[in-house]
Image 1: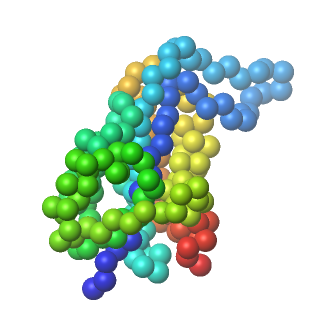
Image 2: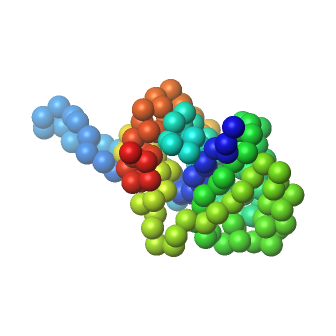
Length: 180
């Protein structure tokens, strides 16, 4: 059996809500409460599929700081527990991906993992970008957590939607133009 494809991307989210259109009774402006803090979290997302775009699966991880080489390595180890067989991983040129420690770790994983870079300045080719957009329009829109655990819970809710609805993931794959 051939290798699966994996698309990898990182994104940031914060305690401050992403304000989107909301509904409220006429004459009652909706109010979004915020703690006023500016705590940020980093998300690592991987979308795997067959070479023809079948059997898509999403994997998300959240970190309390921006993504560095350590987080990349942790995420690859986590991914290995869930993905069986060979994987061709496609990602961008983030400095954490090019770090010496990351590259040294990747050399030890060659028996199951092949890594290739997506072209620079072409985020539209990465289906995970469409996942970030969807999550920020739905689960994370107008959401202002009071605790880190509330943010984790909301991110898990987004991940569950992707996992339960593979047709949504197929839509992300089609939107990238790499699959029909």
